[in-house]
Picture 1 (cartoon, helix red, strand yellow):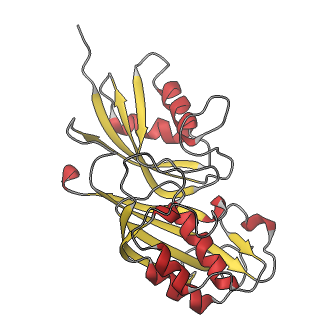
Picture 2: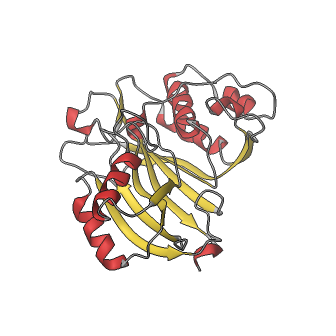
Picture 3: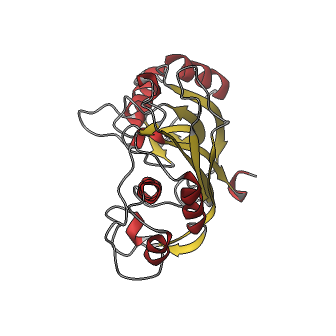
Length: 265
């Protein structure tokens, strides 16, 4: 008799500094690989399962709030599984919640809103302990000009010059709901510099390296290597896919929050 499949949405958070991104890769330590290894241990190595993540974060990228869907061919005692799963995960990954979902829910296709944060500082070099969380630019930056530049990203624009290797046929027009640079008052540590800043980006969907290219472009703007007019022109609909800026370092990026709409109500 064929076993019934059961589906669970599991929310997690992790520091990405020692992982080669989310997705399983042969011979490399990844977040999904570590999660799969832990699930297999908790289930005793005898239950068929697979996992599907909501976001394929890159090497060194962290997540304050991400999620994956667990498909398992045995119904779980959710409370017991969740406790054992968290207990056996490494200290840089933590499960936040577990919820059973129906077959109609799809973690990739379901409407969702993602909120990214990019933490950075500039000027004097940071304490090395800051490296997993924050990018440090030793060059002086025109912060007020960068704030103006960030606002240019808001709304519906062509982002073909702000993504890496887009898939054939994928729309390069995306909508940014909210984009802003402000002083960091959300994350703190004794080894952080006295002043640091967060680039906030909210939207429904992002392409590969999009947020990091947006941030790298703002760094170049702050250094005087680009102008506001350069960014405005790059956001116009065209066939130009050459990068305007550069891909900012991954360790400053954090998937801060993700939300789903009617499917879970």
